[in-house]
Image: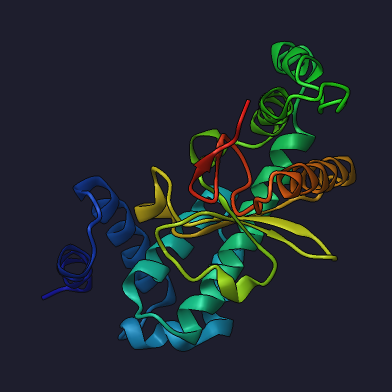
Amino acid sequence: MDYKQHIIDELTNKTKLKPNSIKLYSIRLNNLYKDLGGDFNNKHLSNKITILKYINKLKNLDSKVATYNAIIKIIPDGELKDFYSNERIVINQAKFEKYKNNMKNEKFIEYNKLLEGSPPPTYEDNSIKNILLEFISYISVRHPIRLSLSDMEIIHQKKDADDVNKNYILVTQLDIRFIMNNFKNVASMGQQVISITDKTEEDEIRKYYKYMKRRLKEQNDTMKYFLYNHYAGKIIPI
């Protein structure tokens, strides 16, 4: 059995990937096998330096992410998978930054108008529902996670993001991150961690969080979830 067929069989038996994803990942791993030469097998993936050098030489960020995706799918859970997952996060962040830097006003004028039309809440309205809707508009326009915002739990330590079927927002004194475990393409992309790098956005999130905690405390409630009308198993009163 050749290496490519071995990978196809292994991905088919051990994952729930669709045929197109299996085909893509088997091609990536087979290319890695051919380019590195020799009697390559999965054990060689533990050679981090060799793998990192290989991936860094790939021409574009999409190829790098696809190769990391393939490696992560083929190796068992553990320190090695965590290592490659963290490297993939770095590349995904680079893709996002490149996208932002390459935006041209003449091509993205409608998006810019959308940003202008989705300002943060002013908190002049005393209705929790209205503040909530204003903030949903503000944050969902700026981050492509709008379908995963519902029931996103708030945590303050990364170790608490322990349910692979849930999405979280990690709020610490140092930073804010979305930890995405449950979304449409999770089977092929794996967990996604989105760091809030824009200082203005971070300030607005902290402002919203502080406001909603105070309002819920006034109702003898706690803020377990980040967005929408569902908090601690209840519907916020309008």
